[in-house]
Image: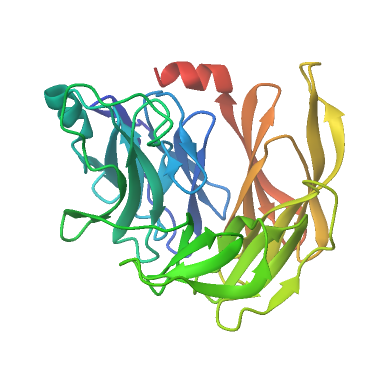
Length: 349
């Protein structure tokens, strides 16, 4: 089959082929090459988007310059030449949502856009506008001979096509389905309205919460706290341990399945010598509902496709490999070579 390739503003879009409607799918991105694939539960894989290489940037609570798919899998937010862009997968057309690059040219103002998160209904994007190079006021070069742009957090409304600045009084963690922001403030998990009203604690627990994952309906939160993964009710604040207290970085990256009936995480069991011979890499298992189902090494990334299928992107001797896994049996459904990382990066230039 001949594959048509559309070149537009140096962004390469790959049209999607027809797939049976009963197949579940998920959009997966990889931080190493700024590409997004659509992965189906039947093992089919399609490259959807890759963005020309730009310096990676971002920080916890602020956002990233890498592509971020929407919750409904209908859009991909990405950055291009310091601006926020949107790809609508139905039309395969990209749209520029901010005008930071134009502002820079006209007013010589130093700025950079970071994608912070999507609303659960995929109608709005939260982004952070900071100074370029480092991105964050107070840790960057001063603006140059121009009127400074409005630094800080903003919400872009896709329907209204409007941007509104918003106050965020803490470290952003997630955008809850009811519209509240989930934040970390002074070692507390708190929620607040978009308008910046009083912070309300989620739970009585305190500490350095990390690696947050919120269930689709917003009733539960998975978090890493004091070397342990816990499950927190957003209604009562009660917490349930998912793992025992482990060593540093022993239990990591918990995620709910789409229905929130299943929980996966990575369990590090050892450190291995890096294939290059320089340094060490973590090794262990992907765990689902307390069962070790698949080995992992290094910087493996995983995501649920549906309640019975997980996709894993692994780095194997300088190449990216995708494995589609039956999460109930721990068996491979299919495996795909995504390409050599160096070659994929060169294609992005």
